[in-house]
Image (cartoon, rainbow, N blue to C red; front, top):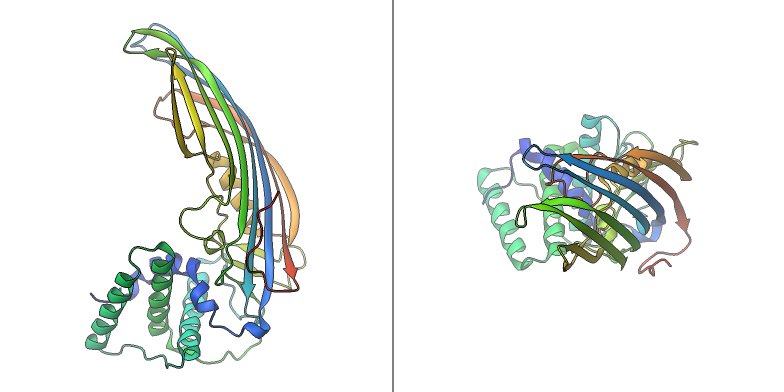
Length: 345
């Protein structure tokens, strides 16, 4: 197995930077700076659905509503060393260069912290040997998501160092941007509550007529997870020289709460325990609002909902409705390292 070629660096960087906890842990913790991103978002939506199908001599319709509340607490850490490059620079090429240099330096720091020395592959044979070691280390993870993520980050960082050997040298100008990243033990916490109801009539092919249906969804979920810690999904930069919008957030990960769905039609009710959806439009707006934002603030908007509230648009037809979305956030420094925050109430 050989290492990815340079033309694949773009994709590996995007995936690997998310899981930099293992490398950041090797940094100079005495100078570490901790902050906590707190986000509270609410969604209050109503929606109608209508379908006029020439195959069926009746109008199919429904009305739905949902109320949702999301609360996240995400601890992040900077090594206390401002960097020359903005890890989340809005310019794509500048951002990729910043990430490449950042990963290369983290690889060097992690290896030296364990008593080793960063030796980059310079020949095809050395590259092949490094590829074999990567494969072996991934096998030792035995499918564990967090372990696989750490291995991906580590080897992507070594690849980054091969592309930017100058990144090993000190900068000639003072840094400006503290990078805030996940760190070992930074789990974070979340609480999501959700109710949803959709009711109407649709054509049932089995009985060949319109039948009423009703779908009810409920969730009250703490610390919902996709197998990775909440903090591992975030990358942030804080620019102290920007007095109006110092916060940069690469992505806003909203955990999907697991709840109960009940669907009733023709006097038959089915129940399923499954992830419950946030409207896509709401998630996109929250992400864009926090992408480059004040250190704390609040915002609200009303969004159109052209897709089904329950995330299932296979029935086709026309959905119309609106969602009132509110978000409040803060990126607050803490005086002591954050290790295992409790769930919000």
